[in-house]
Image 1 (cartoon, one colour):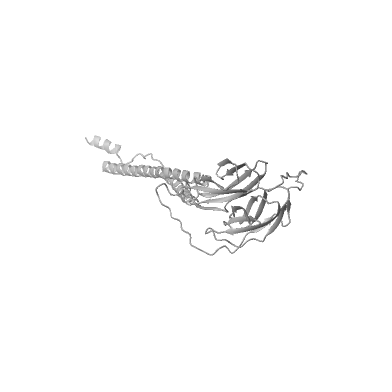
Image 2: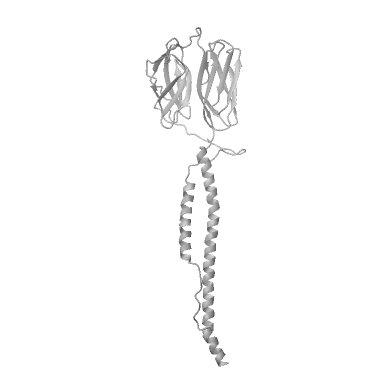
Length: 322
């Protein structure tokens, strides 16, 4: 009996076999790095510029604008230079302007077209000229439709009998020149709301063909047997500023052209790249955070389990030694 106790005591002498375990220090460092990186990307994704789409159907959106002073700075026509002569029409007009204002151009006090000043303070628009002298003036308007000062006048001339750049002379139809006239600018409409453009043709010979390009990849072609003012309707699907063009052709081939800005109220859709990137990045991050949390919990569980196993083995060895 004593010998058996000695053998048992010798077998459990307290020299425990080292327990094989995984190094958790490296895993902890890796998880820390992943956590820091994930946090940084989440913050970055949250700071991306992203414009949410407009109110959903059935909701109400209210936008207010506080009244202010009208623009004190006007536009300046930088091209063409004063005294320039042209054999063809339309011609491009360029200039500077207060950023994000609306620029309306007039020829001999007749509305010639409108466009929006860019955020860099510049505008460009093609206008149809009147045969003979054209006195050009640009006028800016703010968001409240308050007019700023007129630009210095620039005088150019249009002579269809002049030689063109190719050496040929422009067609001279004789008789009255044809013009297309309409309102200066269209404001106040909303997506899904029908707007109508009043169009009037001056001069030319009936019948007329009128093509309206709405600036949203849609156009409308119709014919008219007279030059009585008429209205052509259109409905925009999204908010924004659209540059629409109206071109009329008469039975003798005369062509008249007009470019007009149409402003559709509401929240403008985000840029395609920003819209596509932002929700995708956030969706990926939302999916990664639960996985990361589960990985941390799993490693922590194994580490605590191993510590508990080692503690139990040590306690068992002490009991056997005693």
